[in-house]
Length: 354
Image (cartoon, rainbow, N blue to C red; front, top):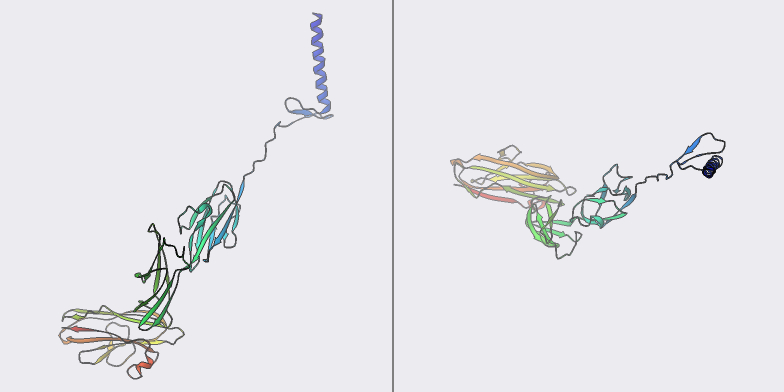
Protein backbone atom coordinates (compact mmCIF):
# COMPACT_ATOMS: atom_id res chain seq x y z
CA UNK A 1 0.00 0.00 0.00
CA UNK A 2 2.83 2.36 0.84
CA UNK A 3 4.48 1.42 -2.47
CA UNK A 4 1.43 2.35 -4.52
CA UNK A 5 1.13 5.76 -2.86
CA UNK A 6 4.80 6.36 -3.53
CA UNK A 7 4.43 5.62 -7.24
CA UNK A 8 1.41 7.96 -7.56
CA UNK A 9 3.34 10.79 -5.93
CA UNK A 10 6.29 10.31 -8.26
CA UNK A 11 4.02 10.53 -11.33
CA UNK A 12 2.31 13.70 -10.07
CA UNK A 13 5.68 15.31 -9.37
CA UNK A 14 6.86 14.47 -12.92
CA UNK A 15 3.78 15.93 -14.61
CA UNK A 16 4.03 19.10 -12.53
CA UNK A 17 7.63 19.66 -13.62
CA UNK A 18 6.77 19.09 -17.32
CA UNK A 19 4.03 21.75 -17.09
CA UNK A 20 6.46 24.23 -15.52
CA UNK A 21 8.98 23.66 -18.31
CA UNK A 22 6.42 24.62 -21.00
CA UNK A 23 5.28 27.62 -18.99
CA UNK A 24 8.83 29.04 -18.73
CA UNK A 25 10.18 28.16 -22.17
CA UNK A 26 7.22 29.07 -24.34
CA UNK A 27 6.90 25.50 -25.55
CA UNK A 28 3.86 24.31 -27.40
CA UNK A 29 1.28 22.14 -25.81
CA UNK A 30 -0.51 19.30 -27.52
CA UNK A 31 -3.45 21.58 -28.35
CA UNK A 32 -1.16 23.74 -30.48
CA UNK A 33 -1.01 26.61 -27.96
CA UNK A 34 1.92 28.05 -26.03
CA UNK A 35 2.54 30.65 -23.35
CA UNK A 36 5.48 32.97 -23.51
CA UNK A 37 7.44 33.74 -20.40
CA UNK A 38 5.94 36.66 -18.52
CA UNK A 39 2.86 36.61 -20.74
CA UNK A 40 -0.51 35.80 -19.19
CA UNK A 41 -2.03 34.94 -22.59
CA UNK A 42 -1.80 31.66 -24.47
CA UNK A 43 -0.96 31.90 -28.19
CA UNK A 44 -2.55 29.35 -30.55
CA UNK A 45 -2.04 28.56 -34.25
CA UNK A 46 -2.80 25.82 -36.73
CA UNK A 47 -0.29 23.05 -36.82
CA UNK A 48 -0.46 22.90 -40.70
CA UNK A 49 -0.58 26.36 -42.40
CA UNK A 50 -2.86 26.57 -45.56
CA UNK A 51 -0.85 27.24 -48.75
CA UNK A 52 -1.84 30.31 -50.85
CA UNK A 53 -4.14 29.23 -53.71
CA UNK A 54 -2.72 30.44 -57.08
CA UNK A 55 -4.32 29.89 -60.52
CA UNK A 56 -2.00 28.76 -63.31
CA UNK A 57 -1.39 31.10 -66.27
CA UNK A 58 -0.46 30.13 -69.87
CA UNK A 59 0.72 32.28 -72.77
CA UNK A 60 -0.81 32.43 -76.26
CA UNK A 61 1.21 33.77 -79.21
CA UNK A 62 -0.14 34.50 -82.72
CA UNK A 63 2.06 34.49 -85.82
CA UNK A 64 0.71 35.72 -89.17
CA UNK A 65 2.14 34.15 -92.32
CA UNK A 66 1.70 34.76 -96.05
CA UNK A 67 1.47 37.76 -98.36
CA UNK A 68 -2.09 38.75 -97.43
CA UNK A 69 -3.23 41.24 -94.80
CA UNK A 70 -5.53 40.72 -91.83
CA UNK A 71 -5.95 40.85 -88.04
CA UNK A 72 -6.44 38.04 -85.51
CA UNK A 73 -8.48 38.97 -82.43
CA UNK A 74 -9.55 37.17 -79.26
CA UNK A 75 -12.76 37.73 -77.35
CA UNK A 76 -12.33 40.13 -74.43
CA UNK A 77 -13.32 37.78 -71.62
CA UNK A 78 -13.14 38.19 -67.86
CA UNK A 79 -11.13 34.96 -67.97
CA UNK A 80 -8.20 36.71 -69.62
CA UNK A 81 -5.47 38.85 -68.17
CA UNK A 82 -5.31 40.61 -71.53
CA UNK A 83 -6.42 39.89 -75.09
CA UNK A 84 -5.13 39.36 -78.63
CA UNK A 85 -5.39 42.04 -81.31
CA UNK A 86 -2.79 41.00 -83.88
CA UNK A 87 -2.41 43.61 -85.59
CA UNK A 88 -0.01 44.88 -83.06
CA UNK A 89 -0.81 42.88 -79.91
CA UNK A 90 0.05 39.28 -80.84
CA UNK A 91 0.83 37.81 -77.39
CA UNK A 92 -1.44 37.35 -74.40
CA UNK A 93 -1.71 35.50 -71.08
CA UNK A 94 -4.80 33.52 -70.13
CA UNK A 95 -5.92 31.46 -67.14
CA UNK A 96 -5.49 27.72 -67.49
CA UNK A 97 -8.12 25.42 -68.98
CA UNK A 98 -10.29 28.16 -70.44
CA UNK A 99 -11.29 28.27 -74.12
CA UNK A 100 -10.26 31.45 -75.95
CA UNK A 101 -12.16 32.30 -79.16
CA UNK A 102 -9.93 33.58 -81.99
CA UNK A 103 -11.31 35.31 -85.09
CA UNK A 104 -9.33 36.01 -88.28
CA UNK A 105 -10.40 39.29 -89.89
CA UNK A 106 -9.41 40.01 -93.50
CA UNK A 107 -8.41 43.28 -95.17
CA UNK A 108 -9.28 44.29 -98.72
CA UNK A 109 -7.60 42.35 -101.54
CA UNK A 110 -6.64 39.50 -99.17
CA UNK A 111 -8.26 36.31 -97.91
CA UNK A 112 -7.75 33.98 -94.97
CA UNK A 113 -6.37 30.51 -95.81
CA UNK A 114 -6.32 28.65 -92.48
CA UNK A 115 -4.67 27.89 -89.14
CA UNK A 116 -1.71 25.90 -87.80
CA UNK A 117 -1.16 24.73 -84.21
CA UNK A 118 -4.12 23.76 -82.05
CA UNK A 119 -6.48 25.16 -84.71
CA UNK A 120 -5.03 23.06 -87.54
CA UNK A 121 -7.91 20.57 -87.43
CA UNK A 122 -10.37 23.28 -88.47
CA UNK A 123 -11.23 23.30 -92.17
CA UNK A 124 -9.59 25.62 -94.69
CA UNK A 125 -10.91 29.20 -94.80
CA UNK A 126 -12.68 28.83 -91.40
CA UNK A 127 -12.09 32.15 -89.66
CA UNK A 128 -12.93 31.15 -86.06
CA UNK A 129 -11.11 28.81 -83.65
CA UNK A 130 -11.54 28.03 -79.93
CA UNK A 131 -8.19 27.39 -78.19
CA UNK A 132 -8.04 25.39 -74.94
CA UNK A 133 -5.47 27.12 -72.74
CA UNK A 134 -4.02 24.00 -71.11
CA UNK A 135 -0.41 24.90 -72.03
CA UNK A 136 1.70 27.65 -73.62
CA UNK A 137 0.71 27.79 -77.29
CA UNK A 138 1.64 29.35 -80.63
CA UNK A 139 -1.06 29.61 -83.32
CA UNK A 140 -0.19 30.45 -86.92
CA UNK A 141 -2.68 32.28 -89.17
CA UNK A 142 -2.14 32.14 -92.94
CA UNK A 143 -3.24 34.99 -95.24
CA UNK A 144 -2.96 35.31 -99.02
CA UNK A 145 -3.48 38.13 -101.49
CA UNK A 146 -6.59 38.03 -103.63
CA UNK A 147 -6.26 37.04 -107.26
CA UNK A 148 -5.01 39.58 -109.81
CA UNK A 149 -6.85 40.59 -112.97
CA UNK A 150 -6.39 43.20 -115.66
CA UNK A 151 -8.81 44.22 -118.41
CA UNK A 152 -7.66 46.18 -121.44
CA UNK A 153 -10.22 47.76 -123.75
CA UNK A 154 -9.19 47.57 -127.42
CA UNK A 155 -12.47 48.05 -129.34
CA UNK A 156 -14.15 45.94 -130.43
CA UNK A 157 -12.33 43.42 -128.18
CA UNK A 158 -11.50 43.21 -124.48
CA UNK A 159 -8.34 41.44 -123.27
CA UNK A 160 -8.62 39.92 -119.78
CA UNK A 161 -5.56 38.67 -117.88
CA UNK A 162 -6.38 36.36 -114.95
CA UNK A 163 -3.80 35.34 -112.34
CA UNK A 164 -4.41 33.14 -109.28
CA UNK A 165 -0.74 32.46 -108.53
CA UNK A 166 -1.08 34.24 -105.16
CA UNK A 167 -4.08 32.17 -104.20
CA UNK A 168 -4.10 29.34 -101.68
CA UNK A 169 -1.89 26.33 -102.52
CA UNK A 170 -0.84 27.69 -105.89
CA UNK A 171 -0.08 24.97 -108.41
CA UNK A 172 -1.79 22.21 -106.46
CA UNK A 173 -3.23 19.40 -108.55
CA UNK A 174 -5.96 19.03 -105.95
CA UNK A 175 -7.52 22.41 -106.74
CA UNK A 176 -9.61 23.58 -109.68
CA UNK A 177 -9.71 27.28 -110.63
CA UNK A 178 -12.89 28.50 -112.34
CA UNK A 179 -13.32 32.10 -113.46
CA UNK A 180 -16.66 33.87 -113.97
CA UNK A 181 -17.38 37.24 -115.60
CA UNK A 182 -20.50 38.97 -114.27
CA UNK A 183 -21.69 35.61 -112.84
CA UNK A 184 -21.27 33.79 -116.16
CA UNK A 185 -18.60 31.14 -116.79
CA UNK A 186 -15.46 32.54 -118.43
CA UNK A 187 -12.52 30.08 -118.22
CA UNK A 188 -10.72 27.37 -116.22
CA UNK A 189 -7.09 27.60 -115.12
CA UNK A 190 -4.73 29.14 -112.60
CA UNK A 191 -3.40 31.76 -115.03
CA UNK A 192 -5.18 32.66 -118.26
CA UNK A 193 -5.55 35.35 -120.92
CA UNK A 194 -9.04 35.60 -122.43
CA UNK A 195 -10.34 37.73 -125.31
CA UNK A 196 -14.05 38.63 -125.31
CA UNK A 197 -16.34 40.83 -127.37
CA UNK A 198 -18.18 42.28 -124.39
CA UNK A 199 -17.60 42.65 -120.66
CA UNK A 200 -21.09 43.87 -119.82
CA UNK A 201 -20.01 47.35 -118.79
CA UNK A 202 -17.01 49.33 -117.62
CA UNK A 203 -17.24 47.91 -114.09
CA UNK A 204 -17.25 44.12 -114.61
CA UNK A 205 -17.25 41.67 -111.72
CA UNK A 206 -14.69 38.88 -111.88
CA UNK A 207 -15.14 35.85 -109.63
CA UNK A 208 -12.56 33.19 -108.80
CA UNK A 209 -13.99 29.88 -107.61
CA UNK A 210 -11.39 27.60 -105.95
CA UNK A 211 -12.70 24.03 -105.81
CA UNK A 212 -10.92 21.33 -103.77
CA UNK A 213 -11.05 17.57 -104.27
CA UNK A 214 -14.03 17.30 -101.86
CA UNK A 215 -15.87 19.80 -104.12
CA UNK A 216 -15.78 22.46 -101.43
CA UNK A 217 -15.87 25.84 -103.15
CA UNK A 218 -14.32 29.07 -101.87
CA UNK A 219 -15.47 32.15 -103.79
CA UNK A 220 -13.54 35.40 -104.21
CA UNK A 221 -14.92 38.27 -106.27
CA UNK A 222 -14.01 41.83 -107.11
CA UNK A 223 -15.08 44.70 -109.37
CA UNK A 224 -12.40 45.71 -111.88
CA UNK A 225 -13.04 49.18 -113.40
CA UNK A 226 -11.80 49.44 -116.98
CA UNK A 227 -10.03 52.71 -117.78
CA UNK A 228 -11.07 54.86 -120.75
CA UNK A 229 -14.07 52.60 -121.30
CA UNK A 230 -17.45 53.19 -122.94
CA UNK A 231 -20.01 50.46 -123.60
CA UNK A 232 -23.56 50.36 -125.03
CA UNK A 233 -26.31 47.92 -125.98
CA UNK A 234 -30.02 47.95 -126.82
CA UNK A 235 -32.23 45.57 -124.85
CA UNK A 236 -35.71 44.20 -125.57
CA UNK A 237 -35.89 44.84 -129.31
CA UNK A 238 -37.30 41.90 -131.33
CA UNK A 239 -36.44 41.14 -134.95
CA UNK A 240 -40.04 41.75 -136.05
CA UNK A 241 -43.43 42.88 -134.78
CA UNK A 242 -47.00 42.84 -136.00
CA UNK A 243 -49.44 45.72 -135.98
CA UNK A 244 -51.10 45.80 -132.58
CA UNK A 245 -48.00 44.57 -130.75
CA UNK A 246 -46.21 46.61 -128.11
CA UNK A 247 -42.58 47.64 -128.59
CA UNK A 248 -40.45 48.21 -125.49
CA UNK A 249 -36.74 49.05 -125.80
CA UNK A 250 -34.09 49.93 -123.21
CA UNK A 251 -30.63 51.38 -123.61
CA UNK A 252 -27.96 50.06 -121.27
CA UNK A 253 -24.50 51.57 -121.08
CA UNK A 254 -21.46 52.27 -118.98
CA UNK A 255 -18.86 55.04 -118.98
CA UNK A 256 -15.51 55.29 -117.20
CA UNK A 257 -13.42 57.98 -118.90
CA UNK A 258 -12.20 60.05 -115.94
CA UNK A 259 -9.00 61.82 -117.03
CA UNK A 260 -9.59 61.09 -120.71
CA UNK A 261 -12.25 63.72 -121.43
CA UNK A 262 -16.04 63.55 -120.99
CA UNK A 263 -18.39 62.09 -123.60
CA UNK A 264 -21.91 62.73 -124.93
CA UNK A 265 -24.42 60.01 -125.81
CA UNK A 266 -26.53 60.29 -128.97
CA UNK A 267 -29.49 58.00 -129.78
CA UNK A 268 -31.54 58.05 -132.98
CA UNK A 269 -34.14 55.91 -134.75
CA UNK A 270 -34.22 55.70 -138.54
CA UNK A 271 -37.86 55.49 -139.72
CA UNK A 272 -39.19 53.63 -142.79
CA UNK A 273 -39.07 56.91 -144.78
CA UNK A 274 -35.33 57.31 -143.88
CA UNK A 275 -35.92 60.27 -141.57
CA UNK A 276 -34.20 60.31 -138.17
CA UNK A 277 -35.85 60.80 -134.79
CA UNK A 278 -33.44 61.83 -132.00
CA UNK A 279 -33.90 60.93 -128.35
CA UNK A 280 -33.84 64.29 -126.60
CA UNK A 281 -34.16 63.51 -122.85
CA UNK A 282 -34.93 60.75 -120.36
CA UNK A 283 -38.71 61.10 -120.66
CA UNK A 284 -40.38 58.04 -122.19
CA UNK A 285 -41.01 58.24 -125.98
CA UNK A 286 -39.51 61.74 -126.15
CA UNK A 287 -38.05 62.05 -129.68
CA UNK A 288 -37.48 64.99 -131.99
CA UNK A 289 -36.67 65.49 -135.68
CA UNK A 290 -34.20 68.14 -134.56
CA UNK A 291 -30.69 66.71 -133.90
CA UNK A 292 -30.20 66.59 -130.16
CA UNK A 293 -27.83 64.98 -127.64
CA UNK A 294 -29.48 62.48 -125.30
CA UNK A 295 -27.04 62.60 -122.32
CA UNK A 296 -24.14 65.06 -122.02
CA UNK A 297 -20.89 65.45 -120.07
CA UNK A 298 -20.53 61.85 -118.92
CA UNK A 299 -17.39 60.64 -117.15
CA UNK A 300 -18.15 57.79 -114.73
CA UNK A 301 -21.67 56.41 -114.84
CA UNK A 302 -23.85 53.36 -115.49
CA UNK A 303 -26.79 53.99 -117.84
CA UNK A 304 -30.11 52.13 -117.84
CA UNK A 305 -33.02 53.94 -119.53
CA UNK A 306 -36.32 52.89 -121.07
CA UNK A 307 -36.35 54.86 -124.34
CA UNK A 308 -39.52 53.66 -126.05
CA UNK A 309 -42.72 51.88 -125.00
CA UNK A 310 -45.76 52.10 -127.29
CA UNK A 311 -48.37 50.14 -129.27
CA UNK A 312 -47.83 49.71 -133.02
CA UNK A 313 -50.62 50.76 -135.41
CA UNK A 314 -51.08 50.47 -139.18
CA UNK A 315 -49.19 53.71 -139.84
CA UNK A 316 -46.03 52.25 -138.33
CA UNK A 317 -45.39 49.43 -140.78
CA UNK A 318 -41.87 49.19 -142.16
CA UNK A 319 -38.22 48.82 -141.15
CA UNK A 320 -36.71 50.65 -138.19
CA UNK A 321 -33.02 51.00 -137.24
CA UNK A 322 -31.86 52.05 -133.77
CA UNK A 323 -28.50 53.85 -133.43
CA UNK A 324 -26.41 54.81 -130.37
CA UNK A 325 -22.98 56.47 -130.22
CA UNK A 326 -20.61 58.09 -127.72
CA UNK A 327 -18.74 61.17 -129.02
CA UNK A 328 -16.45 63.81 -127.54
CA UNK A 329 -18.31 66.22 -125.29
CA UNK A 330 -19.89 69.13 -127.17
CA UNK A 331 -19.52 67.63 -130.68
CA UNK A 332 -22.21 66.79 -133.24
CA UNK A 333 -21.91 63.54 -135.23
CA UNK A 334 -24.12 65.00 -137.99
CA UNK A 335 -21.81 67.96 -138.55
CA UNK A 336 -18.35 66.99 -137.31
CA UNK A 337 -16.11 64.26 -138.72
CA UNK A 338 -17.42 61.16 -136.94
CA UNK A 339 -14.14 59.28 -137.26
CA UNK A 340 -12.40 62.06 -135.30
CA UNK A 341 -14.98 62.59 -132.55
CA UNK A 342 -16.42 59.14 -131.91
CA UNK A 343 -15.52 57.46 -128.60
CA UNK A 344 -17.27 54.18 -129.36
CA UNK A 345 -18.34 52.16 -132.34
CA UNK A 346 -21.85 52.92 -133.57
CA UNK A 347 -24.24 50.43 -131.94
CA UNK A 348 -27.12 49.60 -134.30
CA UNK A 349 -29.96 47.08 -134.45
CA UNK A 350 -32.98 46.65 -136.76
CA UNK A 351 -36.58 45.53 -136.55
CA UNK A 352 -39.54 45.21 -138.96
CA UNK A 353 -43.17 45.96 -138.26
CA UNK A 354 -45.50 43.84 -140.45
